[in-house]
Image 1 (tube, helix red, strand yellow):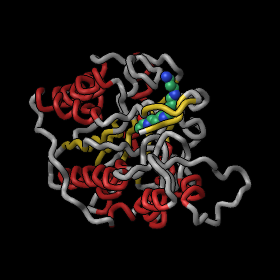
Image 2 (cartoon, protein in one colour):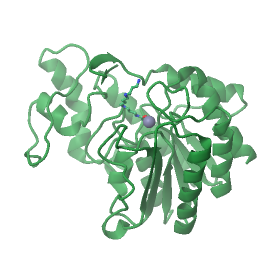
Image 3 (cartoon, rainbow, N blue to C red):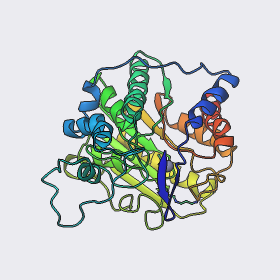
Image 4 (cartoon, helix red, strand yellow):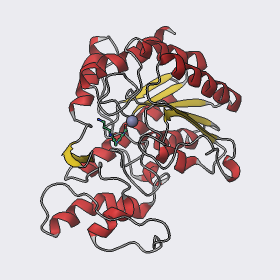
Length: 329
Ligand code: SP5
Ligand code: ZN
């Protein structure tokens, strides 16, 4: 998979072996090995995502190949300030620009199946939690938190955490909180729940003044309509270490406790790691033990959903440390 980075089209940081290394590390640490989710119906996806957008994801690669293209489908033109977004273009090039927000998230022959399987993992994990288990982990790839109701980007096509949160609400939860600890602001999750009072979204991330996704994630984005006060962004500077990050965590935890959710969904990105190739925080591997224990101190009814984390050599250890800390904390 390709992405545009520093002016060059190169290999994506979201490599397939990310998930394999996490699965191996979990098994080695004595956690239940991940299982493949059942093929869920499209319905729980359509509660969160626009149906024409989902149709676009399903058909885009076919349309691309039908034009004689080779390789991965990428956009090259986008609507910005004042342009027409009320008319969806018919050509796949126009549609790619309409539905994408970056040049890092190609559509390939396997994209729909992968995105659907990833969402199915989140749905299955939500259902496990619904059956009385106190915690579950959806080992999702592709990730989801940059995908909004009708657009994709940041390696994300379907918003796994949002689909899981909605699934929990639709199966009896009255209030769900989502804590997003990925290095990047979860613009998609924020957008999906921005005007709703039944989902509290809290995110600790790199300041959009300096970091992707650049156009959301500021502290003054606090929710709209019934969702006023239900969105919390804590942007932090590059170089943030555990001391500073954990102070932000405590602030987020206080707000989540006040909201009083029935369930917590954690968008678990470990691209806050000091060795991450595309991020600039400075968390150490041992800090993920503390992170897991801190989450356990907030609530034990938690659905973890995998997001980013690109330092593949340490990725398994860092994710395992979150769960070791959570189990012991
Ligand atoms: C789920 C997730 O973590 N998605 C992240 C997508 C980030 N895409 C753009 C990253 C641009 C990074 N450029 C800085 C490279 C420094 N070597
Ligand atoms: Zn990220």
